[in-house]
Length: 202
Length: 202
DNA sequence: ACCTGAACACCGTTCAAGT
DNA sequence: ACCTGAACACCGTTCAAGT
Image (cartoon, rainbow over all chains, first blue to last red; front, side, top):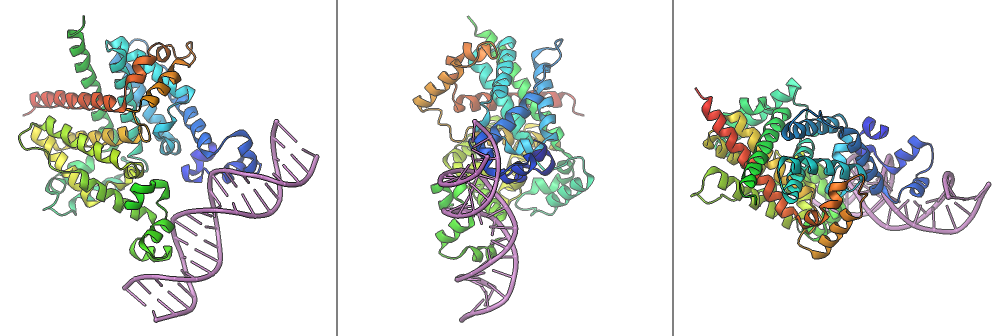
């Protein structure tokens, strides 16, 4: 994990891990089936750190938002972990615990187990996806902002007129704002879903 | 692209591409700066195929849903492309055209350019994320379904009681349902956003 | 200009051999 | 049981040399 944080996902090779641990690469295979398993373990551990319990005095939407923010913040602080996240690694014990928690949250809010699971999963998809697609981009860096604006403005005004026209607004939009809008929309959508399924309940 | 579809992302090596093209690996670097550039070009081409125009007689939400479904379907038919998708590769001409289209859609629906960009970006994040995190999982396969149910049911009932309790419902939930719920929620949330920003408009 | 052959510095994984 | 050294079959990239 130290290696991953310090030198990034690309440096997480069996040779480097072995060196960090002071043994040969071959010995690692005594403790871990292959590199894939090592990655799974690392990801699951990172998830455990990220999933603390939200404040008790809050409704489901506030709790969901709180957890989503915390999870995202943790992943952004450890970009190496984020870049390792794939669909196949949701099976570790800590990932499952997180899923169990989210499921309880949405069932408590009034959704059926199936809908609750879909909602929880969608939320996780969005959080992880939004980190994943903004890796290596620091939105707060002014140089980055200028670069984005120049990029949009220099495009072909015939092909993508709106990008050119609104280059300033687009450059201004950081990944934080983007995340906030998406999260708010998703939760508002869940609320609509809850109200609708309330109506059709027997 | 043929190589990618036939043998997957892992087989997309410079040596294999060279062999497919009937030349040496070294010659590839005459046409492409490095492997990264090759990937970017492939991804952008795939996006162009996926982004056809939705039917004219539809409101913004129907159009957005139509495009999202089409994009997702295309990515699922070409898993190799999906697994190559990263945040850094949204800069190809076709990706930008898609972004321009989505921006127009949400501005037309009544959002400010900034909010429209955030909405478009969130939607893309969700679509790509949901494909990404379900790679290699065929939800319709009954064996897969049984396997999921067994997986949930065999967990520790103390640690993750809800997963065990609702194992059947969770196993039933495929990635299609999951996507549908998330997409609907996101669009419903955008609608709320539009109504609110209508009210506060000068 | 474009291509080749050969090399460089890396990977993940395996396995007989040691203790 | 755990570790080592050495190898195997791969990577992406570079570069002098050819045409």
